[in-house]
Amino acid sequence: MIDVAGLDVRYGEFHAVQDVSFRVGRGESFGLVGESGSGKSTVLRAIMGLAPCQAARLEIDGAAVGPVRDTVFCRRVQMVFQDPYGSIHPRHPVDRVLAEPLSIHKLPDAESRILRALKDVGLGPAFRFRFPHQLSGGQRQRVAIARALITEPEVLLLDEPTSALDVSVQSEILNLLDGLRKARGLSYVMVSHNLAVVAHMCSRLAVMNHGRIVEEMTREDLNDGKAAQPYTRELIAASKGYRPAGAAACATA
Ligand SMILES: Nc1ncnc2c1ncn2[C@@H]1O[C@H](COP(=O)(O)OP(=O)(O)OP(=O)(O)O)[C@@H](O)[C@H]1O
Ligand SMILES: [Mg+2]
Image 1 (spheres, rainbow, N blue to C red):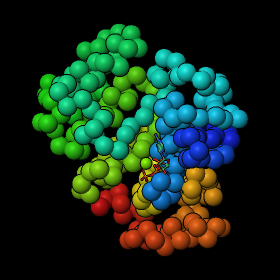
Image 2: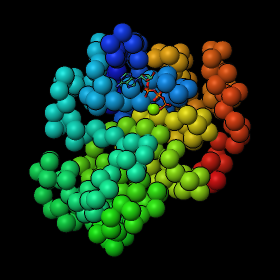
Image 3: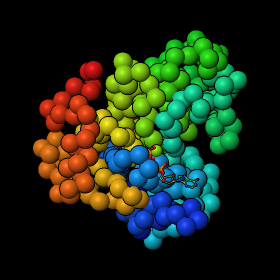
């Protein structure tokens, strides 16, 4: 579903992402981990056309992504950002937040689509006319997910979708995302600094350091602590509270 090869992002002299390659199958969830500044968000932004990139290959479902992301791409590939406080317009009611992508993509039946999108993310119809300041952080992130889903995309790029949220609602949102992926066969690329979250959510992952992928591994490798690279072993050791057996615990925490 997603095929990235030789992705490079430069900001002037600074090489933020270097020669990054990975593939994600349809219905699969792929994780990107690494320390702050390693280039994880930049990879997602580059796919969305929000960072200046070059790539040997950048394909969605076998079709090359053009230098300007067209409306077909934007409908199929959606991004959810870390901070639901910054990513939703503070003075627009939920109804307008959800109606906007429908009008951009000229999709019919706005009324029923908006109600369905709210239902899909576990929010009742009453939430439709609320403003962001009348929502909890978790509810805001549900609205952001509803906005991403309303164009019926096939790919979601998730940039730390729960790290701005209280621990008590993180697992609710992760379980919501996991259920949506399974129900709709969505493909995810999910950035997280939390290895337990990635172990819970992703079947494969790549470890980034200084703009490069240093290692790609499976969830089983991660759970078994089978890291080939010293950097990955350091990352696992440094991720406080991470216990292989505790990976499932984040679902119920
Ligand atoms: N617009 C920009 N101009 C210049 N440098 C940038 C820009 N955006 C990102 N960078 C730099 O690129 C590097 C990678 O940033 P990125 O946001 O991708 O890191 P990250 O892995 O997502 O980190 P974090 O975990 O803190 O979110 C950083 O050194 C950052 O300062
Ligand atoms: Mg980031």
